[in-house]
Image (cartoon, rainbow, N blue to C red; front, top):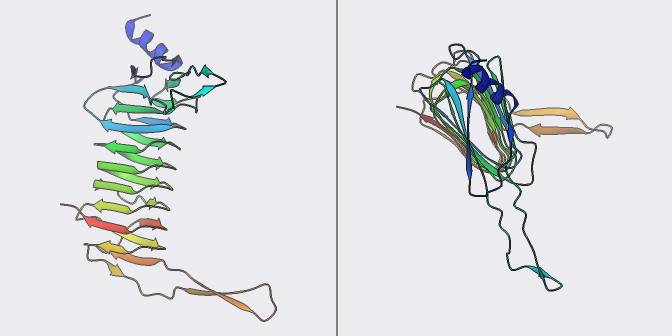
Length: 271
């Protein structure tokens, strides 16, 4: 078995635990065929994810646990507490250019910083608590999900579906995949998206308690936003007002949905 195959077996099976809370663990995951496109799926329960594209052939992972915030002087019946900071548990698996990175633990938050080659075809990143998601210098089909944290994507290309609940969604696209629909949403935060000047799209926009801004020359479609439906009471009707704004940028194209509840929607024209 040559060295490359040994490294590949480690990447397929590794699950590691680090006890020192300030220690950062580094792991290299080789791809089965670096010349072909690959997919990446990263999932955390607690923590942040940062993914950066680079000119290389391996996936490089750095993992570090976040230090828990505890009152070290806490006592009970005259006894001092001994804290168990746990460690890092992270699984990385690569099989036929499909890479999955996740953690079986949820009690302790960690930060993941990942460098990836530039030929990714699909990327799926998701976390729940105590962290943000950041993506830089990546071109791919991307699905990004967060719950309690923001999403920031800089100098990216391809297509993006990004949603969170508590946090802003900020995306700077320097290129867009043709004919690919996209969606950006949050409940509490701004949706702030930058497109290339030549971007073409059919925009579907809704901000319940905010405003919509753009420096594109958007053609707004005039259509009725009120719908009438029967209620459960005889002879009674309910009128529902749908506050969606529909418009076309540069003549229109694939659908792009943007939605939030508390915050503004900003659609920017890049340089």
